Image (cartoon, rainbow, N blue to C red; front, top):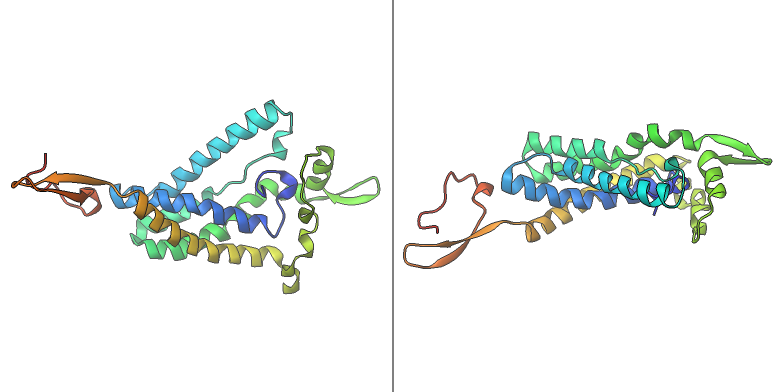
Length: 225
């Protein structure tokens, strides 16, 4: 929800929730493509496919069907962080280093990567004597059901005790949690996305073997059928 409406893209929860949720898909797809086929573009492919689906939904469902302005429902991008994760995996060939460096960069780069897109919506304006941001004013013009009150109270959160630097603290917290989420979902990929074959040996014994490309073997074991 925080990544959907323009007036919900705040400085505190949006930079935290979105990258933590987005890195889950990337880690699983990265495991499958890298371990089985040594293809270093799992995260980027995942994010591009995700954004393609989001753009189709935002355009056909909310712009064409419901007549919301397209700039009111723009999806945020996570491509910069995905590119860094794939690059780290390609250079280091180590999933733990990718989790620490790439996962951290995925959380840190989310807000600055989206600032050129959504920064102008934070500009102030005065509407009927009330100081608002452009995003809030647009949200008042296009009323939706079920708008939670905590969105309006987001600036009163506990992160204000850090001297007002809410976005910086939120970005580093998102980076830390993204590292952990990468590790968890990497193992989910290992659990559900491991390719295997059933091999029949010369004595007729059938055994299960993992995908040979994952271990760099040049050919199939003798006796495979």
